[in-house]
Image (cartoon, rainbow, N blue to C red; front, side, top):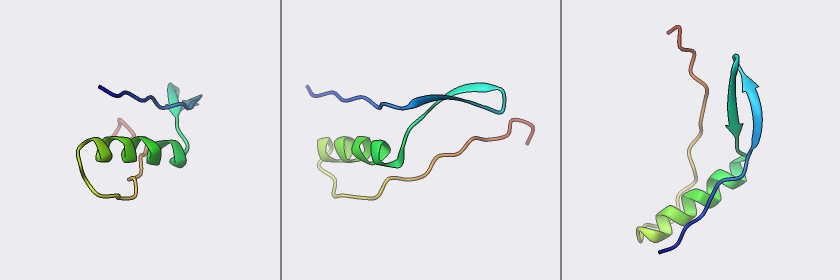
Length: 54
């Protein structure tokens, strides 16, 4: 079994503490998972902070 982790930095966004990752870090995790599943390369998606009032 192989494992990996994400390394980010703590930020406060809209009053909530979040761990924010650079796109490069997200891409490395995407590559790790896709490789483990035998899938071809694909660019990582994007993330966003949702406003809970919507």
